[in-house]
Amino acid sequence: MKTIQDFYKETGLRNEKVGLINLGCARNLVDSQVMLGEGQKNGAVISEVADSDVVIINTCSFIEEAKQESIDTILDVLELKKQGKIKKVVIAGCLAQRYTKELEKEFKEADAIIGTQNLQQEHVPAQVSLTPKHFAYIKICESCYNQCSFCIIPKIKGKFISRTMESIITEVKKMDENGVKELNIIGQDITAYGMDIYREKSLARLLKDIVKETNKIEWIRILYAFPAHVTDELIEVIGNESKICKYIDIPLQHVTDHLLKSMNRNITKVETIALIEKFRKKIPSAALRTTFVVGLPGETDKDFEELMCFVKDMAFEKVGVFKYSHEEGTVAYDMPNQVSQKVKNGRFNRLMAVQQEVSKNIVRRFVGQTLKVLIEEKENEEEFVYSGRSEYDAPEVDGIVYVHAGKKLMAGQFIDVKISDAYEYDLIGDLV
Image 1 (cartoon, one colour):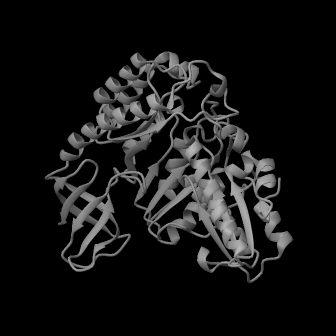
Image 2 (cartoon, rainbow, N blue to C red; image 1 turned 45 degrees about the horizontal axis):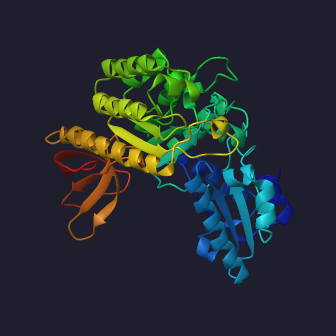
């Protein structure tokens, strides 16, 4: 399948203006940065979409809603080409990798369809940053080491591939020199990092090296940790290293044993609880983010009630909930006892309501405390109100700390904030 490098070389876009629309997760965002970096390396001028000659759409196809958003965006951009407002349209990303032939048939006006594989090479990729200067994402591996029955990612992304530590550290040093304050480490399964090239789970060792090799980076955040691959050494490193946020995103997906088995999660309920308790014992201040899927094939009312009780009892600091998406090409697609959309919707709403109450109680504990906050942007021009995040909040997906500063602050600045009030997910405080 054609790569973005092939497209740039074949079309000769020197001095052409290239814009990009990114859809999906932070991992897609990193891919988008690489695509633009390759364009810049080949002489293209990176531009806003509205002013571009060429528009790249980096699509997502993880679940049905993502596919529909991608298709709608493609149609909108192709309409701009039809009107003569842009010259070329490139469909890239997961949807392109998964449905190449279908897209070629349906969208003949597209100038290229680019897959996701072979995008990140062993060398440090050229990138154009799409995040604010003060935080960045670094993808340390591609695809997933596990083969969950409900997930299409391994089929889209191919085999699991870890980047070498040398290439990662080189990129991290560059980010550090450029003034990045928060480094978010991502991948489909970062806890499997190194199992292919080093024959062992190597995330803990990588984290130690990142801590040692950085000066300006103050927060290192771990996202997308597969629970069955979490090691005692990793927990110790998170607890012991002051630069590493006391936060971990560890998608559990469900808790009943028969569903965990049918999902091929390689962990049991007892082992899951033991892992959570180990985290909380070793790092009492840690914020645990997780996600759950409701409406899986075979999920009964009893299973769902067990999940609800689990969420109440465990009191996770952050929870995301997804409705099972019936994805062709997955093992779960052909499983019996599929759950109706109506039931999925009901379970989604009920579980979110449970977590909202849990979250209310958790965030109220911060009232009266002083937190270190990374400023993101100004919310009110006249009253010097800013928004930022604590180490317990990842970009885009978690809560916000609203700060009454009384003076001018800068994005990327760390400040101390005394918390005065709390909502369901967000905090309010004053500059100390």
